[in-house]
Every structure is written in C-alpha cells, then in structure tokens.
Length: 127
Image (cartoon, rainbow, N blue to C red; front, side, top):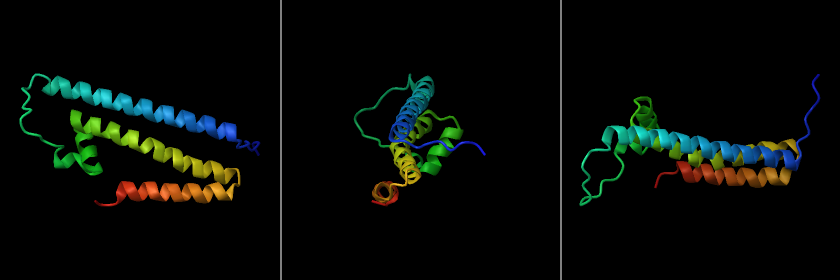
C-alpha cells in the first residue's frame, strides 16, 4: 500500500497556484492561436466602424463555440480561450473543496461549496 500524502496548506496553495498559472497560460495560448487564425483569414478585410455588430449568435453558447473551434474558425477559438479563462477560477474553487475535504476542515468545505454553488449559478442562470 503506497504511503498517503499529507495535504498541508502549503501543498494545496502550491497546487492552486500551479492550477491558476496553467489555466491562464493555456487560455492565453488558445486566444493567441485563435487571433492568428482570425487575422490570417480576415486581416485584410475592410472595417466598418459605423455600425456596432456584436458576437454572432453561434458564439454565445458553449455548443456553438465548440462547433466553431472544431471548424478552426478564429472567433470560435478566441471564445474558447475566454471560456478557459473563466473556468480557471471555477476549477480553483472546485479543487479547494477537495483540498479542504482532505484536510477534514468541514467549515471551509461548507463555505467553499456555497461559493462554488454561487459561481455555477451565476454562470448558468439565464438573464
């Protein structure tokens, strides 16, 4: 039986710091790739700044973003990078629940579950 690792505050902080760094770097890389693809395809198109055009409807939901990403469309890849950036702190909170549970700190588990629930509700609730 392998020895059980001790979950100390320092170890959890290191993992959380690495998780945040990796999430931000991955997000930046995905946005950069999407930006390069977008500029290669649309960089010479004339700009019309007289009329504001928001994001197309297909880029306002996860399903559409994934469809555009698979099709290697620059805007979809950029949106995926932004989703990854938003998901990074959510993943941090989710891992914190696990870390506090491993430390058997019920108070922090409960408070972190509340924060996680609020985050999920705010991300999924319709306007």
